[in-house]
Length: 252
Image 1 (cartoon, rainbow, N blue to C red):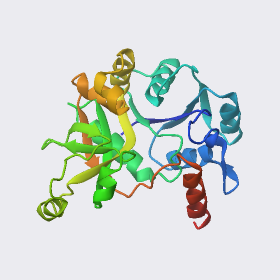
Image 2 (spheres, rainbow, N blue to C red):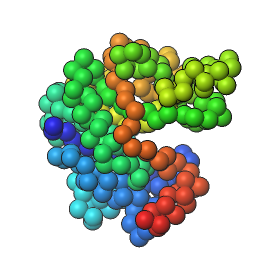
Image 3 (spheres, rainbow, N blue to C red):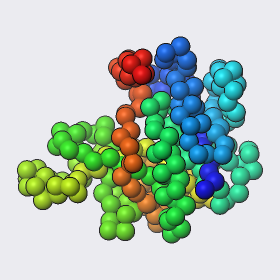
């Protein structure tokens, strides 16, 4: 299997500005993400950014960094530009590893790439993790996904899906099958599908939920899903997340 990883990173985070260069155990956050990517089976890892500070930091620890437009509104747009700059063909498999995921298990990167490689009818692949607590299913900051019998996504939402009219009954009926699934924002695309995606205008459902993957679904593309082979800790979105991650990495 041959695939590339692109790590989109920008300084202008709304909740934690400058987080790619936040120091964790003596190294910038983005370096920890890069090291996780390098431990995978990917044959190329690239950091895509709109910041010269991030580019310089990346080059200092030996990473390849591509400068992209400041006008991009999503990581997918940034990755599409990177694929164009580097001349990658439409059939190239690309994994989108967010620049705030310093605890990503490398095996999950291989898993999502392999999932797409083996599912030729799909344009995108992604992962989920079971939700066991009803409170988490109701949390709008936790994105949920429901899947069909073919393993492909039916819908993503910040709302509780499926809606449990009786949570106790749902848990009893779905024991071992996990009624709720937390979507993990780790994607594999074929470069051609990614180029098509970025050429489309944002969709109505995407605008409503603020979830760009809904643009794929609304346009008829298939997103194949699988349960992650390892638990994937949450990424760094806030100052509290940063402190939690510092403690986890310091503890080894």
